[in-house]
Length: 465
Length: 125
Image 1 (spheres, rainbow over the protein chains, first blue to last red):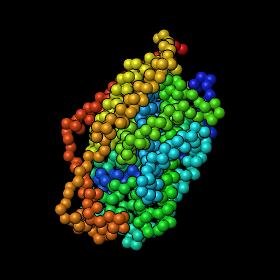
Image 2 (tube, rainbow over the protein chains, first blue to last red; image 1 turned 60 degrees about the vertical axis):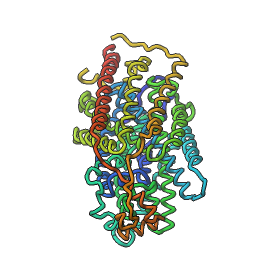
Image 3 (spheres, one colour; image 1 turned 120 degrees about the vertical axis):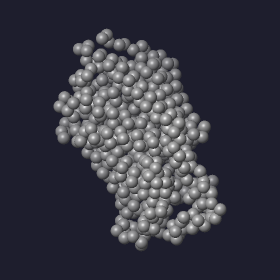
Image 4 (cartoon, chains in turn green, blue; image 1 turned 45 degrees about the vertical axis):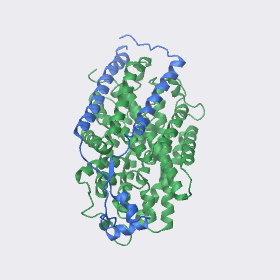
């Protein structure tokens, strides 16, 4: 793997984003967004298929995301521009696909941010136990304060994310070792809670259905690519940060499942909003209970923080290429952040935080995520075909091509079927929305876009054109 | 190929476009909630006898439910609220057709636009 510093995409003489981030920030961005999935969300897969189904999808979906990370690392270490998968689509597939991918990103991250804020508000309300106290003020404060943090600068934002993500992660490790995981019967009672009779209550179709929320174990790790234009060395930092993030999350997911499935019945595990906090409570240790309460809040904060960062950069990129009014492409002259995009998405996040519940917000986010992964599996095939190995300098080349792309595509198809099993109407509604907005872009909005200027990478002409 | 010069968009036109996108986002996300299309398709399989045994809970599970503050009566609606995985083939076919149609349109229309981009970027030199 080479470690060449790639030149930033050139977009005129405007003020640009700052290159101040390293691999640790990339890790903090990716894991920070995703780790909240261990604190809530993954456990709804137990609801759809039982405790054993949640474990099976933990590993199989882990394979899906390993493919995502491998593919993403190759393309993004080569297409180093803000917008991540949006910039990839623009250079490899075409403008309409890029427009859609940016919307996938904005929806996935904004809805994830909404889920995080709801979780944080609900957790505080549950802990306070005060009658009449609602989560609204906590949700509003979370979204507004984090938007302000993002407005003030990416380095501070991701430094904060690194610290709070690390604390939340360490809390899972502490919980795991505190319950004597090598001993059954004392604290953990896996064999009494997950029995042959209830391990797969819906059979194998329940396992497939569980894929939907299995996504939540890792959803958002691909967000590391949004930092492509702000890392000092994309070719080095993005693959290292993303792969380290995936390894971290696979370990956390396995520990989380083992502890939670060994402490509570699957029916409860499948509906609770706080599986790890509940696990802390069920150990009987006030210290662990409070630690996991704080960790749940920190994980939600870290995720919302990273989501604001990523959604704003995707929106900013749409403005920069005039896919949306170029007003959104302004960079703050002092803080060097896409401040108008951050401020524009703020009221949208607030509005949905007040009208959607946690389960629905998570589903919206997952739907956009899976549409994006489907694109990624096809995108890498086109990338290798248009610019075969050796024709351009890649920061990283992923092994076993095209196996990861095929695995990713197949798992996306299974996940679409899983979403159909219980949430099919939402999937159809979302797809129709994307189709209609695509028509609007293709037949109207695209006329305002400069054609050749969209292609900013210093590559040769693609093969076949 | 001659270089394409896009028309200048007025301020009012830009604001209108932003409003269109925001309205579309809200309709896409809010309408399923309003129409009751969002959320899981679950229903409660009610039991007459509300005991831990009838609910399929062994003594270890029952003890945990009680530690969590549940009785057999309050746990009944949690435990018996189940998915019923019946494959509705017409809906599945519609969903598959919508998804495939969407992706086919995306790739074909993107390719047409992409050819213009490549032509202007590389053939003008």
